[in-house]
Image (cartoon, rainbow over all chains, first blue to last red; front, side, top):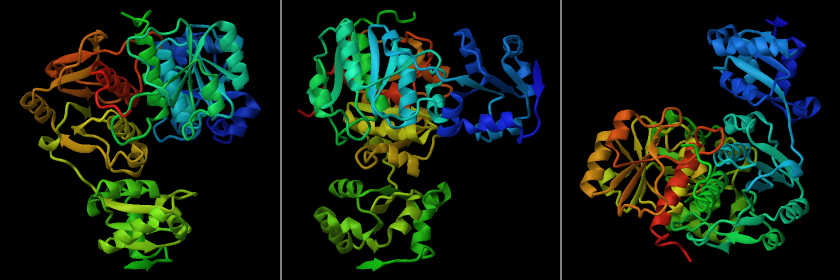
Length: 268
Length: 268
């Protein structure tokens, strides 16, 4: 079941390359994930690619040989190709030896369940989104909810920034109204980050269930959205900067919340 | 004293464009800072450009008119040009209406003084460096010390990510030995972030003076560097991710330290 492709003009290779564009991703419902480590982690979580490209060098790792046997057995298009074609597919000079095309998965909001959830209103920067996925994974958040118009969570840049957490953290989409209804139904406190909020007293316990809501990079949350929050938290500031990077601010919010819960569930 | 340049072949414009390259920055000792807001903030901190380019549209803001008068009076090469030339200088389709070339400033380590300092060992990604400058500014850190081989702190990408904090936070360079000697001389605790450390008990007060030391994106701190730290702190982790983005991890470390000091000095 393993094919060998040596031509960049092959339709399959062209299709893989098209996943760098929003159009290509929309038409196929796929996204690119690069690297042997990512493919192995995805398989552990039972995510299997639709197509898996690899260079012969990948076979040096016994784990990869075993993975390739599994993908071939599962009917995954498993294709051996050259590093130069992998470079073209990844648009990188030094490509990874393995690149997979995976099916985009958006989880229905009602299936995102946990005591900590992240909601991003209008996030624009794929690097910020990806970094936030990685942080959400690190604190064991149940999912990241994209609210309103956002960047594409499956762009190559976004997926790269997740460092593998794209497979570990659920992504949902919702309107702001759906989000507030969801919070109410679950009894979760909606905690918005805003300069108009107050510094969250360091000794106060965290709500039992919380959704941390972050506004967009340029404009933050709207007044109506702020009003809908159960708690508006301002991160203290001392210098001349008037705001933090969105990914950094989200990380500080999430870790501070988790601290108030005694870092429950942390790995030893 | 205001000149008008309309040709992209003008040597001054070429020189500005060269600041996108390490070579151009090294040869001139300058770096590019984009945007009217940045130019105004820099002036407030008494940083004046060597050359300031602007498009006529910038004159719509009274503050900018006043700034341009000041720069011209100070002998700054103040040059009116077209938006298309600004687009070429910034390599952006929608350029800012003001772009300045400023002198790179590295502060001697002994002149970095304060109760919180950030040290970055081998930081590679200019976006991470810039984001960390912005966070350092937000917590009122005295400076960011670049240890060993690092990315260029004055690249366009780094400066953009600082969001103006490039002018507000001191940058120093040091070898690891210089850093430890400096910490000892100042009585500052060297707090390293490492997976080999222990979670910092949330109730423990912060050392009076602290230098937060972050390792490089790929490899973290070396064993020898870890041994030289007064405290090794591990950020707790719960999910599948095994590390955080460097900018995020630094933000969490700095805010956690500042919390232990009751967010002293925070703006109301």
